[in-house]
Length: 217
Image (cartoon, rainbow, N blue to C red; front, side, top):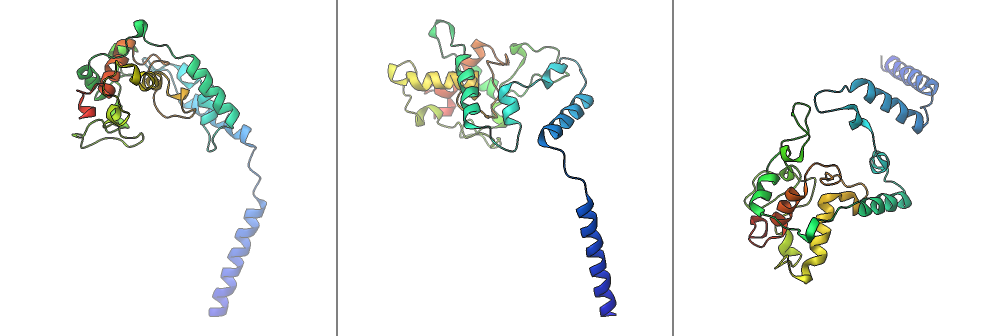
């Protein structure tokens, strides 16, 4: 019986090996990408405020929709284009009300097909989905780093002081278009994509940088 079992096992292995060796080779990556794109387009339909233009990818999205990071030259191009496209706040006013910023950070609404509008006023920032915001938080996402003590860690005792200018400008740029500083950043491009307006961004800036904000306690 043992010999028969061994023979059957060997026969099954040989059959499996033969089937594997006869399998057709995979199509080249470009063809697989085209097939995947066709499947997505076939499965997605316009519904409510979600239109077909959501399937269109810009350079950064295309380059980062891969299991491999983009080449260094492409990453630099993505970051340079994103940085050049940042709209800095009118009047040089970077900060708003941290209380309004906290409301935005905790608001997960907006941009779903069931919403009636794509206007920034109807959107939240959803920061809690990816970040810890304050020490009091007991539930938060970890896709992004903790934002607790964001301003304090960076030495921003007074956001309006000249010494804080570099951090303030970087923070605004990061909120406007995160790809300006990391080509394949997962962070929403709040300003670039029109998800939030200038006033809302100022409120988030205050949440992150105002010493009185719970973020910096």
